[in-house]
Amino acid sequence: MTPATRQIVFINTAHTITHYSLLILPTAVLAMAVRGGPFGESYGPILALATGMFVFYGLLSLPQGWLVARFGRKTLMTAFFLGTGVSLIGAGAAHSPAMLAVALSLAGAFASIYHPIGTTMLVEAAGDKPGRSIGVNGVFGNFGVALAPVVTAFLANQVGWRAAFVVPGLLCAVAGLCWMRTPLAHVSAHANARPFPPIPRHLVRRAVVVLMLIAISSGLVFNAYTILLPKLMQERLASTASLLPLVGLAAFLVTLCGALTQFSIGRMIDHSTLKQVFLPVSLLLAPAMLALSFAQGWLVLPLAAVVAASIFGQVTVNETMAARYISPALRARIYSVRFFVGFLGAAAAAPVVSILYERTGSVAVVTMVLSAFSVVTLGCALFFPNRREELRPELWAEASAETAALPVAAE
Image 1: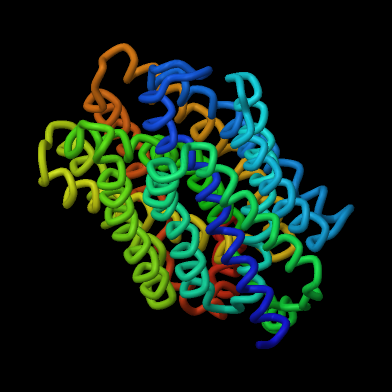
Image 2: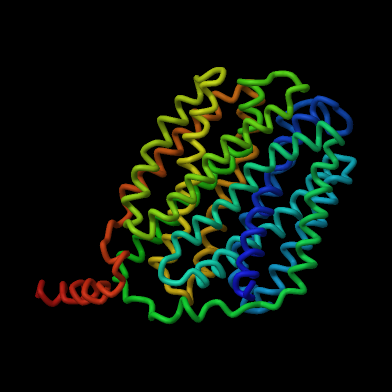
């Protein structure tokens, strides 16, 4: 295994850990609430303890572009692995709501390192066709989303909810120790072999506006849906605590559909403009989410799978936007800003789910609210440019020349 390949393995592993760590509590709470203890017996208040986790996860992504210039990628990724691992172990050892909230907040803070840094490293290693690499990386991330409910349910049912935090925390810390012994590969040479094309500024601005708008809406929809999914499966399919493993398995199968779709879309993107993929995927989301609000029984599974496929498929498209429209020198900063903006939605996810569920006692209202936000995503897809130059970057020079000539022609 070459140093570059070994590094990509760690980047993909970190993506799995990131999303896994964020979704332990939404399943663990089903066991914590049943057994009561220092955290009470109500789903909403315990779930709300994760608010700080999502706030820091988004908020601290903003300075990562500056931190990487000061401390380097190696140091920051080491902090990600070790910090996230120790924080999860701390969550498993918590004996009060305040201790659990602090430990989860720290886990979110260290997890915030991954996307701005890891995504930049991945895109640079991918070269001129990043779609497939981003799709594969997305599969690893969604594998973490899929594994979190099923593994957490198993550990909580067989050992206890504390093990659901401690076990992945230990594995994350071990991965960090292995990362420390791995030399950092220089993988950006291939990506920089061809100069970044001169894309017209108005198209770059348009792409950035869409990127930021969708970060807010998809941040809320993605996080709220993945948080809600175990409760949705429990309410519609398995209402007793003894069926907790079934809840985890159902959530795993649904999320796996999203992961497979993300890989397929990653391959499609390398041969299509972004809008040609983005628009059809966005058209599915709002009606499927609305239908999920009223579905009962086993019909929930295919509908939930369609929603997951649409939500996760959009992630691959969004990651590729920056790769196609933002120069390598600015990508780390743009990714940092994007994930910071996304915290507005991501941080709202836990309290939105918690408050709406506590007031209504049902997941239906939550999914209806998410379907309304999904319309914003559709608007972003309609507004995004559809340019053949995305597939033939050498044509951007002609497009820039035509754009520069427009004021002269007007005169």
